[in-house]
Amino acid sequence: MAEEATEQRSPATPRPVRCIVKLGGAAITNKGELESIDEGSLRSACAQLRQAMSGSGDATPGKVMGMDWSRRPGDPADPVVDTDGFRDMAGLGIDTNFIVVHGAGSFGHFQASRSGVHKGGLHTPLVKAGFVATRISVTSLNQEVVRALAREGIPSIGLSPFACGWSTQQRKLVSANASQIIQSLHAGFVPVLHGDGVLDELLACTILSGDVIIRHLAQLLCPKYVVFLTDVQGVYDRPPTDPDAVLLREIEVDDNGGWSVVKPVLQGNKRGVKTSVAAHDTTGGMETKILEAAAIARLGVDVYITKVDTKDSLRALKGDVDTSSDDWFGTVIRSAK
Image 1 (spheres, one colour):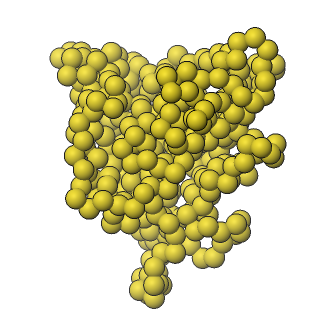
Image 2 (cartoon, helix red, strand yellow):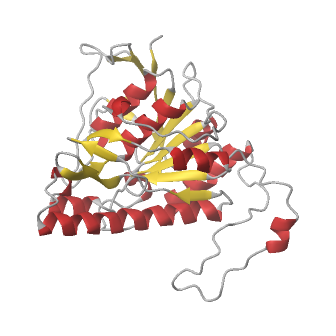
């Protein structure tokens, strides 16, 4: 279990974390196209995150001082860097006490499923090659997410669980050194983690999903709220492609981890959620997301699940969600206490 993972805290303890954000792989990539980023959704998510950090309700805030000073392939000229503008700034003017975790989407899953990395067996050449290929893929996406955040003036730092020494035993997280995450927060950076290939004490290797990472960080750092941005409006009672699917607006979790749908009122089985997982998804898809979100809610931390690039996603990132009103579309998972 994640709660059994060993910890190494930094002596420099940061302020309480405001929010942990999960950028779903299906939300920021085109899952049907190998290693293809949904540039529009990623750009929107980063822009809305900046708005939430700044506390601005204005959809067109003032000038953004970008931090991606690298030349991208195909750029006609070197990047313009406003060093004088940064020197004149008293501060960044944003609350950086956020953590971002992103899924892999069309990055990593293909390589992992083709080679069987998630099943272990690192002693075989195929799995070893697949482990390398998987990490090349997911870390390349991590760099693009960090760059997208940096272009919005968010001081983001990419941190890979493998490089931080995170490991599992029979796919259960047993070692999770959070010292770099805590130190980064203390220094005013936004850590950006991702689902990753990690070493496993019994299987030799496996895949650690971003949803498990978020659950563990929520246990350790107790954020005010957690946001999952996905490619659908929230959690439905059946796959959202079904024309009869109903959006579950509020789910409560009891002390034993059992959960029930509060809003809307369902006939029969109150739990009644059916999920489907893409054939290439090695991390469990929506089912894992719901279970990890329920575990977070048991801690007393509200979890908001909604669609990326909507007014609902901006409100979720700001923590401005009122379940008594019907003007927010998404799913809230919270403790029944």
